[in-house]
Image (cartoon, rainbow, N blue to C red):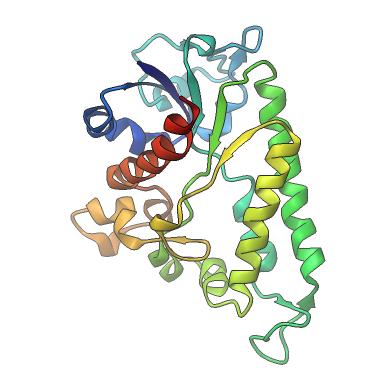
Length: 255
């Protein structure tokens, strides 16, 4: 039996809701969950680097827990794999930084668009990735079974709501930037001793964007009323499909 602890923030909901499907598909897997809202995730208390226990500075934040009635602790050293499901290494900061910028030596949006170099763009990615990877490693200093699974990229329909995402989706060098982003993230995690599991190509519509059918917005009675958050959080189908690739590439390969 492979015991997997799924931990993270609001993106964890997709995996929790897909638990029955995942465990039904893989009888060798048992999942357990520990979720905290993003602002307080890294303020939970570590015990010898092997356990998570909530330590809330604000009492009313307890009702934001995915399962507030469960014991607020998880001994991570009792699991074969600890799957960190929810963190995107400041991707939104990169989107904001690159929106409205073109790359020197590549096609331009128009002649008035400000220019930056590819090395500068990659440094922007690297600075955020290094800071975040180091933060994860400091938080989990003694956890060799930790796997960082890439948080979902926004739905392709999020471009209707976000100007930054709309500009990224049509960026003349979008594929170049995406390949650089994925490469830098993987290299940074290796340098920090983190096992990184990227979002599989099968769930992507284009670089930086997930296929629309995976968005939680598709489960709304009125998809047109979806907010940006509904296009950033994914559904159970996404979690099941991502876990299938993870099971093949990581769990099965390590057995």
